[in-house]
Image (cartoon, rainbow, N blue to C red; front, top):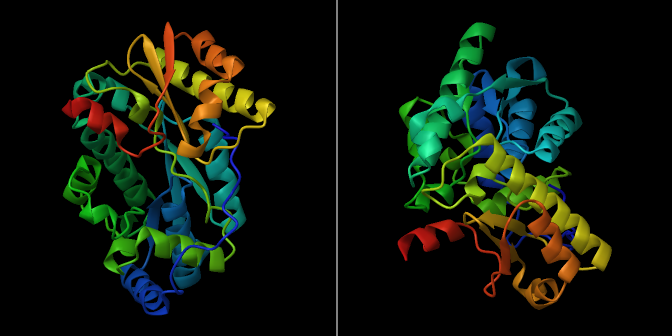
Length: 288
């Protein structure tokens, strides 16, 4: 969903990590040919661009899992970014909503999602003659103790060239900016299911409600002249929790049209998180 964000105007901190970029190039050459699990985010976009530089477009394919948890905006964005990099792109249908462990939405939900996606990507790689499937996991991701999706991908044998080269998130952004990738300043945009509080059943209707709420909220904030880089609508059942940049919290909380826009998507009550946006906020709620 588009956010009324003002992109950062300053480059990421740190020098261009030339040695790690070279390590990435050498690692990609070892892999020979790749299907890239492509979300259109900063990590997978850099991986796709680096693979194209190292291997050429004929030995790289960007593939995106297509399911109800992929927003319409992100569906369009993956095509645009892959086109800008000049790499063939394909969607592959994933059926995680048919998996009980995914629908049940325990804290292990991402394991079932990534296991399903990995299986589909491996099928594509085998059918089209690619040697490996790679994800955009970076070195910082490996330090996060709660990443069941990473474990699922590893269990399926997917490779992680960015992490293998030691590239951190800040370095991924720095290289992306130096290479002119349009994603260098893109905020994180995980799947729609990541907005749903653990224990609430994942359904198409629930995902559609979250997507509509975020879109209408973004439109309302833009109309009100309120900028926020990050924006989430967390589904807590009948309640919606809005998270925006901490600097924008007071203005958003006082913006009645924005709150009403979220209510109109189908929530009985709406509140604004006074602490602002935080990645993994639903893990905090689950631990209370």
